[in-house]
Image 1 (cartoon, rainbow, N blue to C red):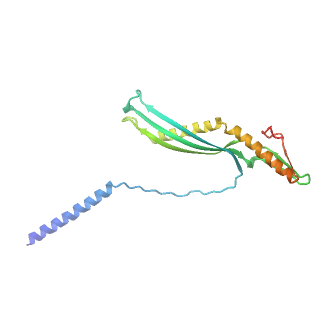
Image 2: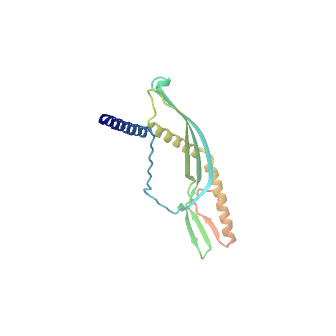
Image 3: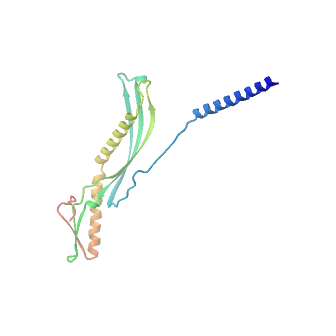
Length: 199
């Protein structure tokens, strides 16, 4: 009887150990992801910007890198779609405004050149294929993203958005001048304005 009891306790202990081992093994196989985010700096400031034009850009980039020979085990390649939204306009904080109340005169000067006020780029990766001996690393991804952002910025700068922005600014300031005249004020421009078409 004592032997049977010892055998039963031994089997029970073995079942408990095996069950615990199985549970630990299953937990180890589960994918666990932890995310932690802290806001380190939150800052607000007043800005005065005039967005005159918005452009949408879509580019497809093919990245290919290989060692010596362009064969599958030595090659890595990626197909990336880049969508960008560019806002072009003026930073109005750079404008010098002089108001002469006795003369009912507003003098504007130092209107800045149009520039990219915001450039939002979204990247979608397609067909990311690494070779057996040539795999993607973090520096490859960073280099691709940097090259794409530089290329898109260049395309925005070469686009027609800046000429259109100048035209829109001319219209904007002509409208301001007309509104000023209706209220009995006169608006003038100094020579350093780059908008030569303005009177």
